[in-house]
Length: 88
Image 1 (cartoon, rainbow, N blue to C red):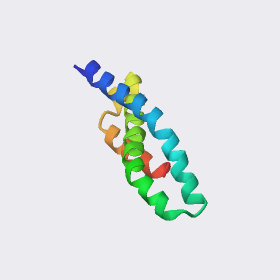
Image 2: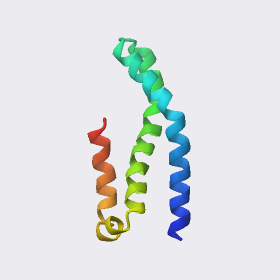
Image 3: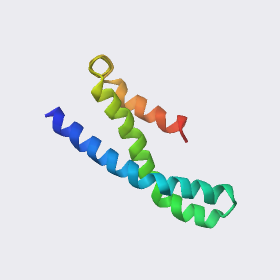
């Protein structure tokens, strides 16, 4: 059922969003101060998790909005794809 898919997505989204935030801030700090080798090592693991959190955030938003989900169900993948370019 769609409910179980929603619960799986939202639970992993919440947990990973809490875990990845300090790493995102730390990797941004390393990049801004010019420590590029340390930045690259950290971003290698941080970026895929951050990308998952960004995409699932859009998916969860569309899933809790029934009008948007029913009307634009084909646009879910496209919206998640576009969001990654807006925030990166």
